[in-house]
Image (tube, rainbow, N blue to C red; front, side, top):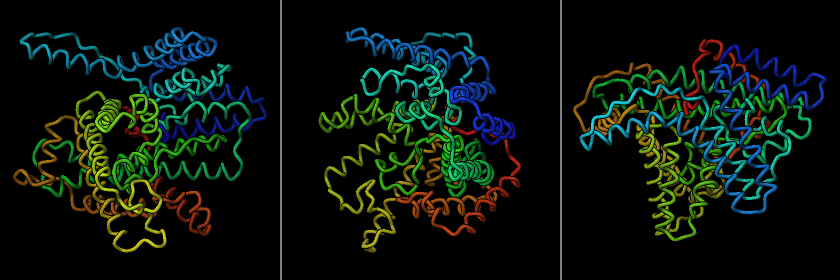
Length: 489
């Protein structure tokens, strides 16, 4: 089930009605759990078994860890959880990829091997709920959280439908305690929740699907050289599409949960206004980047064991982060590029101490902060544009189905091959450049601001007008069935 569908509207209305009915809190939690399984089962009912298996094993392994003092036994219970969850992820997501590469390796030694096609179906959202439940067992092993005693609360933590299939990846301490006491939205929370759902759907349906996706689809599917302007149009279109699609889903998830009285962490913080890649990953897919930091980068040693080890840890973390997104070497290259950018940035920062005004992530980067002179502001704008330019290079590999497509696009973008055909209609080019210029400006103006605070202080008529415009544009778009891009991950 997707947020941008009529069936979800009916489903959500029923869930809200049951949630606000005069039932005991435990009954309401059971209703939410059943609704979450129904939400997931719409795609493929048998995959509910995987959710149940992961939930059961992690719940009981955590309870055993909590009651065990012998370190060897605690490690054994953790290994059981890791093997089950990562094993299912490896089989369903990477089974075909590993088999294909094994066949390719054998062919390099002159051995012809033709196995039967595995015909593995990828369960939607398996990467997200796997990481979420793993964070629980790892935190219990580290004694950062207590083992949950209520199976109902833990099962709801694993399957909570607003963020089940595409995040944000919620930590146990952030969500499970909310299930302990009755949670109902206040009137203001409910209105804000509906507003966030509208905004998320507008980003997905109107901007990503209607304004940007057509140009991106043309450019990334053409098997011939393109003109540089066409190539850049397609890449910029995908840059906006992937943000509006994924941030749109996260915004819908946060709004849906808020309508039920629950709070979920923000997942995007205007990433296209980032200055540098450390700043970018503090703003892009925040729940995933912090997960990699806390459960992979820091356990590997982080930056505590010298510069060479730090660079290796950064690169390894980003390579695995790339592979997490998909079973393809193009995703690995995408992650490798981000790792390279982070390493080069750290090298540069180590040799040249930047002014606090332009330190990555510093609040002083905001264009609206008093006292920033024009020279610093220009350097900040240049940093934003350079980061955005380099991010677009990585998106080429993320979106391309193979290296041939990626190489052809990059060559066209930089004029390294004879100019090809003009494929993107002029009116679509105008739409892409206007949308992307507007998106960059919004990110720049909002980079250190909070959307709720901004809208709370705005004139009421302007908020109503904006909300009405988004609703009207959603109705006129007449597209309600396209899945979100990140469902495939």
